[in-house]
Image 1 (cartoon, rainbow, N blue to C red):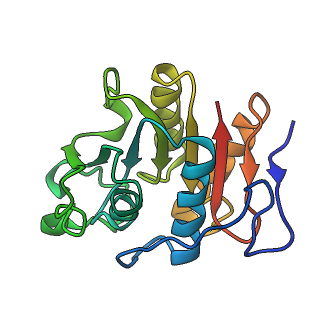
Image 2: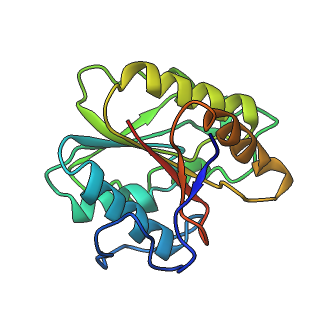
Image 3: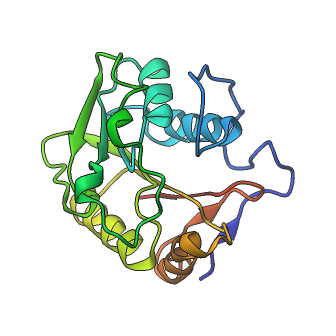
Length: 195
């Protein structure tokens, strides 16, 4: 099996029943069109339950989920620079961690290694994986979530990003697609899997 390329008609992704335009508070590393597509994926495939973002950074994506899905509890996972692995991309917000999203009452920030997060009892039905982009880290994050979440939606960012430090996402997802029906929204850096 290979990763299924969903559309050639970017920016309207095939496989989503209508692309709603959601309100967002801004963006930094994830473009507005991709945040909007992510919100549409959540509405389509995981309207109930809660959301978790691995690699929350300042929290633009989590803020958009908080704003547009106010009944969801949104968990943002990242860790402070003192704990950051030296091989990781230097995009960490430091003292600005969760700074954009903290104003939302349905947001909970978790300062820990994303590959060790425990989601039992949180009713997580959708996860956005955008933390450490190296192969081993994406694999650990994904396997940790898949062990704990048997049904739901996983969305990955930076698939097909050919920057050196991001190529681990593409490599790992191409391997995972041998076992799971992963979809790539062509024209974006987003892939998703509905469990």
